[in-house]
Length: 165
Image (cartoon, rainbow, N blue to C red; front, side):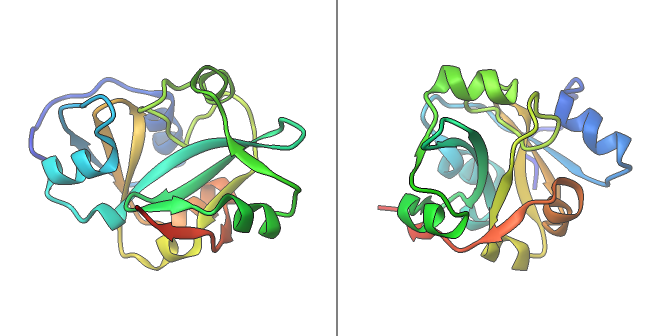
């Protein structure tokens, strides 16, 4: 699966996973600005649907939250707000997202985040046998069993996926 076998130094995400004795695989690729999950999936030879993006968002009170979504889908903000429930959800600006998560945009992992915040996972992700999710650095994904998102992060399943345009 991984294109390069290259050592990647520890990140807060990998420290979190190792601390919880989680088995994971490491997948390094050449980060491309604005390449997103399509680029990482292409380089790693994996289905983009199984590449999970970590999105830092906020509600109408500017309270942060994380949404884990299939790489080939977008988040229906209205549907997400209805399900979690709140009046409105919007993406955080990159600098705000970085302040909340402790990670640079493009390298945001739900593991080892700086600030505790609610985490929501698109329900379809939990049905996959394995997913690749950011390992805390641009150009670095970790392969895990999706059930760990619920078991370790208490991620709450939601159904708010829209086919990407």
